[in-house]
Image (cartoon, rainbow, N blue to C red; front, side, top):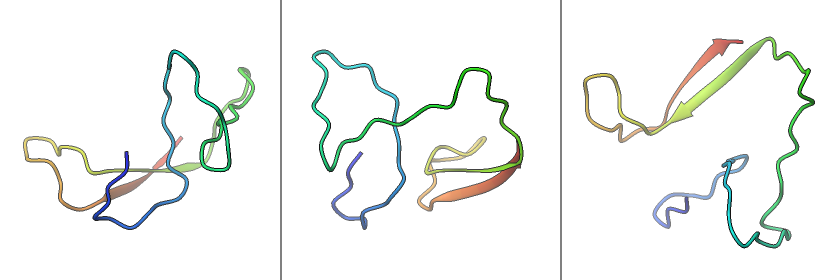
Length: 68
């Protein structure tokens, strides 16, 4: 999603199924997925502005690092 009041971000991604398909260009690119037998390991960062448990939607981007 695009928010004109916020600075642009890099490395955002979404998984969509669209009909008809859109054309890829310098602004729209496919995400290459790992092979189906790939086993993820290590740490990953999760982030978002979603709702917190028992509370309202966050006004701040929250993030946390988790072991995969």
